[in-house]
Length: 125
Image 1 (cartoon, helix red, strand yellow):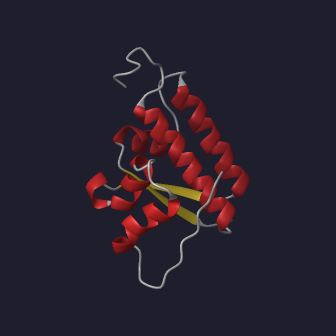
Image 2 (tube, one colour; image 1 turned 135 degrees about the horizontal axis):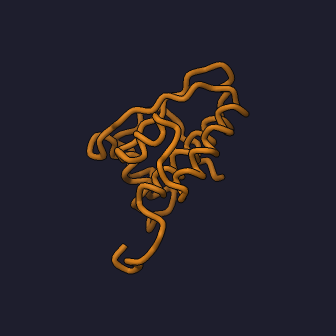
């Protein structure tokens, strides 16, 4: 970021970590054994790392991708990773950017995108 220009963690590294947390939330809330799990991202670096399952660096992505593999084997699911552009997914964009809102405020702002009568579950790792 502009506040830490010499930092060693990139936005793509954070997106990759978020992808792993996403799969953990799914594994904790649903029985994913012997299932194909679809996960979408708007970060192309993350998408290609996840699809390949490896990176050409020894930095953060390599360690996270190792955790992806361990997670997949432990929970016995088949991961599938696809691209979804940011503007096409206002829910993911809001939950990753609107940190100043409380949960009720965030859910109210997202109400146009949530099916009527559906309930939401807030998962905290």
